[in-house]
Image (cartoon, rainbow, N blue to C red):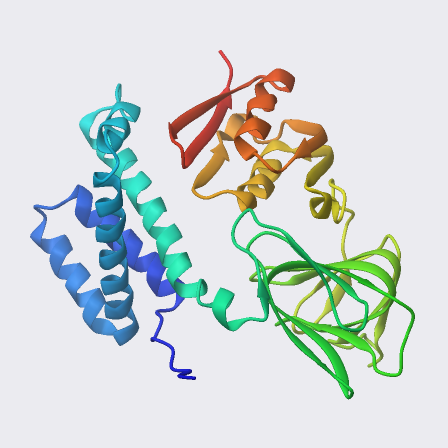
Length: 324
């Protein structure tokens, strides 16, 4: 098998390339800005690679939009009532959000082929491992499995996993993320890996955090109902979440007084595109049980319980504002 992987720009370079592309789209006749962009592209090979990747993916997205009758008209209509400059920003923003999604697909989609188990956005998966352990993957997640007579190791490459394990065996069940190493002693626990840290939440039983070590150089024991935030240098107790741990495994989000902006960020993990709200309603609180199989139906419920209204600029750009 050919294991060569096409070079990928860093996420930070991609963000900068998208920023430059947006600025140039709205200021095509500005030679100074074009020169500054050229200087940025030439400053590092990663910059030029990110620029070429973003331009190629924008062209791909534009080609797909052109193939959909009325797509560009729909985008134009969504910007009606705005000034020309604001309309350009809206339309460019829609295009670039799509580009960011395609960049993300290009940078991480290969993991679905190279990792042992993976899920796409909005997909959940449950499998039973050779030792009887139940492994459930949340949306946009990937793991590698290393099971043999010498070890039982689950490496969480991306996303979130819910693990249900039996009593201790001769070889420990280990879960590894980029931030730490965890041993499932018995019971059920969730491991969610973000860019800055990994959140460990124990539903039942016990889990030992082997890395990083505690203050006395010993493993940290985490019991049912407890959560920890784990970084490469520390593991600290975390405040309880305002949603049920692991409810996603049953296709649900169960909230208790959750902020609206946090709720939308959570729902946004299960759909493509932009989902957000205006600042004046971000701290509205939400409690309830919501089904994940159709996020559009889920969002349609919100105006029935909160003083908000939905605004669809496109299928992939949804915002909430305070109702009139």
